[in-house]
Length: 254
Ligand SMILES: Nc1ncnc2c1ncn2[C@@H]1O[C@H](COP(=O)(O)OP(=O)(O)OP(=O)(O)O)[C@@H](O)[C@H]1O
Ligand SMILES: [Mg+2]
Image (tube, rainbow, N blue to C red; front, side):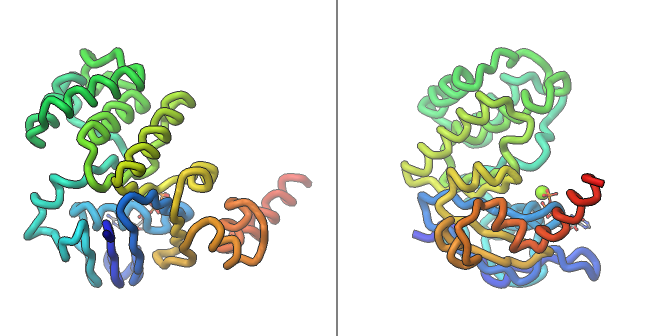
């Protein structure tokens, strides 16, 4: 089954086209790494796919539901999860109150609660009685990850999920995501850490200035670029930043 299908999806801010007629498909059970330089349009795309921003053109199908927002919003949002770029969560909840709140609104069962306990242990979360406003960035990020992972949604949209995580937590997250994908869940993830994409992703999509400039498996991308380099080399080449990086290095070396 195709979990996410996007056709000519477009978003404009005034006359600026942030996402420009993009097309992509993600099969269920796959991990997609959505890559691109700062400002390329990754977050804007995720916002459209999760019903936060309304597109200006094109369409999407999420879990077989055609153009779900806003008419089938609740139906689809029950089945997906989002970890946004910034862990902005209710500052006056304590950690456990936030998790209970999520359990309530998603009408979660005991199995979810068991998974929540496991995740709290795995991520070493011993600060659930703190107010969210008093948590560090990484602490909030882990809490948010638990609130999404515990539900095991059919698609998880993760916008730079490892930012702020310590090495152990990042490793735990990667293990959990791999396991979820093995169980048929879909992961749609942005990251600037190309090594994560290289190691984890079944599919890689690269966006630059709102347009998709490459997509495929790691092997297909290598072929496309006609070289046996790392994803980093490939990425810089495709986004046209290779020359720029060389120039900066030369400048710095002076
Ligand atoms: N609400 C908005 N109003 C105006 N412009 C916006 C808005 N949101 C995003 N943009 C612009 O759209 C472009 C894409 O932004 P987006 O946040 O999608 O980038 P990104 O690929 O997620 O970048 P990063 O890697 O830095 O997170 C940028 O030029 C940004 O300034
Ligand atoms: Mg972003």
